[in-house]
Length: 183
Image (cartoon, rainbow, N blue to C red; front, top):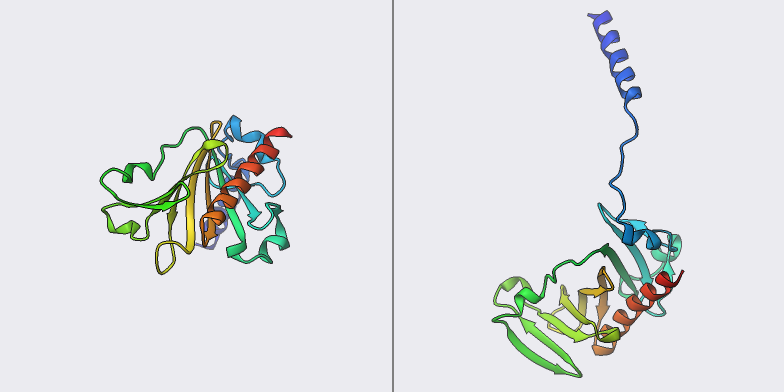
């Protein structure tokens, strides 16, 4: 019995050594230029994550990221291609509330979006949909936004208290994309 265990252990060691490294799925061609940007990290199958300061737009890496409160940073997820807008499908039949300054909050009939989704025009005239995920009432809280820029899809988490916070977060994401595209 002891000899059997030794042989099985050796067989396990040999078969493990014969296996090559696990291959990761190839990165989409459109994401390759962004992969080498400071602070860009692979995020699952075909996406990159970048952390940005919500105050000045600088890229947060390592200890700088840990030292910034979650309310003062933007977590940006970058994906390639056209991803169907997850929030627009909830607009039909939703109750609308005009918040002024080009901001509309809509409340879909399903209870999952009780705080609503804010729709506004971001940088370069692109439509942004931001679902409020926390906060006691619609307005001040955490948001998950979507924006489509030149074949690249962005989804970003940020905190906002007012319309200028929404616009600033959208502008920071757009500026990061512009800077990264120029390199």
